[in-house]
Every structure is written in structure tokens, then in C-alpha cells.
Image 1 (cartoon, rainbow, N blue to C red):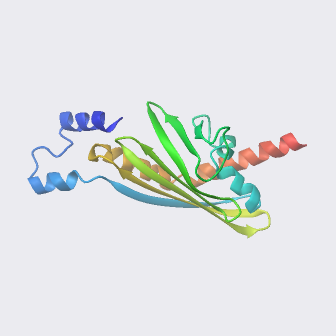
Image 2: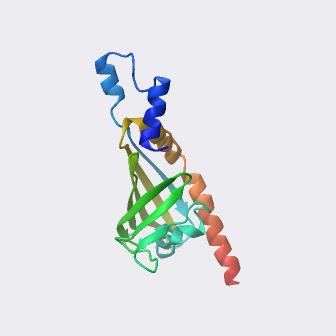
Length: 182
């Protein structure tokens, strides 16, 4: 929901703090802010694993909902400074790749849904062995309007549990690549 619809719903259901003392209503109206992280291991060397964390590289494993439409660059390319949009049901988020350093094992994205929330996704890779890479993903989400608080909190809870799902999807992607190579 956009923030206006969320706020209308909150006002209609009394979830916006109506009837509470002024101090409680103000505290309840503060935009939510959550930070979560998870880790997992990718069965690939750092160089290959890094290629899986650009917007184009994620197409292999992130599922059919991940369909970035690039505004810059054209044609689409995984680079620092890339700007793209992703449709999430009725919402379109705008993403900016703020750090893209495959050799250093670091990628970072800022995304926002206007009038609802801003997120950062920070991906940090490190070599465990020549054929395995540790992945740490840190999500930080902030509501732009208190009406989006419940969504931000729910997203934060989901974020914390994504490690096993991401690991399996990436392993499936790498296995499919190997089958096509042989």
C-alpha cells in the first residue's frame, strides 16, 4: 500500500493512535526503522559468487518477481551507479547501486518506494576456501511515513530469515549452470 492508503487505513481502524494521550500518539507516529542481517555460504569462488549479486546476476536465482528495468545504463549492466526499477505487486521501487566492487566482494543498494519506505541492502563477500564464499547481507529499512511502520517491521522480520532461501536459490542457479556447461 502507498503511505496515503496506509494512513487512511490506519485512521479508519484507529491504528494511528487516535484516542491515546498526545505523547503516546507522537511516539506511535515515529517512522519505524529496522536493521537485520543474515549469513550463508555459496559453493563458488569469490569471483563467481560476486557476479550473482548484481541486478542482472540475480536474475538467475532471485525468482520471477525480480525483473529489474534499467534506466541507466543502457543496455543493462551491473555497475556502480546503475539505476533501475522493480515492480512489487502494486508498488514500483527505485533502486540505485551505490557500491559495486566484485573484486573486493562488496555491493550495496539503496531502494525506495515513494512515500512509503527506504531500504539499503549491503552485501559483503569473503573467501572461505578457494571454492567457497561467505555472504553477509545487511538490510536496513526506514518508513517514510508512520503509516508504513507495520510493513517495514514485517519486512524486517522476513529479511532476517532469508539466508537459507537465498543459499538454496543460489545453489540451484549454480547447479543449473553446471548442467548447461556439460
